[in-house]
Amino acid sequence: MKMLVRGVAATTLALMISGCGFWGDSEEEIEPNPLVSFEAEKSVDVLWSADVGADLGEKYHQFQPAIWGDQVFANDSKGRVQAFSRADGKRSWDVELDITASGGVGAGFGTVAVAAESGELIALSDKDGAIQWRAKVSTEVVAAPQINQNLVVAQLINGRLEAFDRVTGERQWTYDNLVPRLTLRGTSSPIVTQNVTVAGFASGKIVAVDNEKGRVIWERKAALPQGRSELERMVDIDGRPLLADGRLFVTSYQGRLVAIDPRQAQILWSQNVSSYRGLAAGFGNVYVSESNDFIQAFDQSSSASIWRQDALENRAITSPVTLGTTVAVADAEGYLHFMSQVDGHFVARHQVDSQGVRGDMIVADNVLYVLGDSGRLVALKLK
Image 1 (cartoon, rainbow, N blue to C red):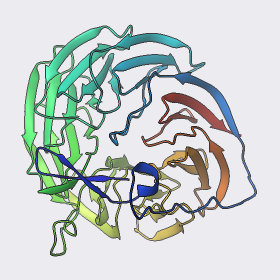
Image 2 (tube, rainbow, N blue to C red):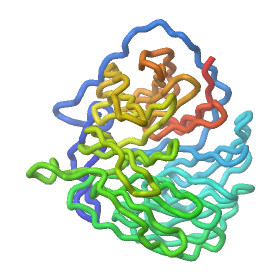
Image 3 (cartoon, rainbow, N blue to C red):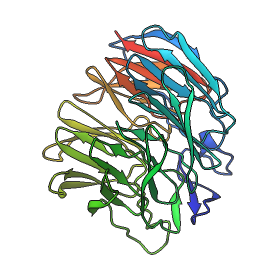
């Protein structure tokens, strides 16, 4: 599901791109594909689950957990932030902030960052949740902030990147990108390495920015607008770019999947694919959740289509993740679907949250962490 917004003020329109049957009232609801039967080859082992507070709200925000060290961090829509042990789910600390949260948490290098709907970025200590600093940003942040040793970087819905000193909260630099009149509601999270931040924008542009001064190192058009109407010309990059095996992969809505050499800023190949989700990699493939909820695997080197799974059409699936020999997505009914990385056939299924899963999942040390829409955080493994 994605909503459209018009203009910098981000006035919400009543038009849905897909998944209307799950996410809103509509005279013509799109029915999701029924679940297909298959013989399970693997089983799902729930290691632990924990309550992160309230549910994740009705504003189409996509909350997701974050991992740093031996802890996993998660927040709810009402400003509650918690830390849990990755080993057993035991709560390490619990903080209630005086905010309405607009997105998930980012974590790294001793800092946990969360954004408020009011346009505020808040940094907490990962040891005890104590507030390190608070900083105003120019508008709403709906994607999880990203952190390196020196910076906390937030991508805003008005097309800006704003970078803050990780320790003091002092603003270090700002990058501006022009936002089209009509966009999807949301942004991708940037990739923040030690020296460079890479981000995709609603204009279909992918940009690499120097972390010291905020100057542009290179920029490329990952997607080119086509068509006569504003709707037809939307090419938002809303899924987080992926760095894998020395290549940068980017996908866009009504656009392309492109592979880029990040050192030379050269586009190596492209495929016509529409997606507003992030990507996953494994077995030499890059995996895409398409906007119609098909899942497709492309060869990272040649761009050849390896397989395509269409049985989850209109089920409002998440970005894919790889877990062992499988690639997994969740859907709006809260089911996890595990597919073989080799040929895309289903190997396991498990319902983790009856209210659905909207935010992206994360994998660490062969454990899958899922934050359901009810506010339940679950850690799972495949047997």
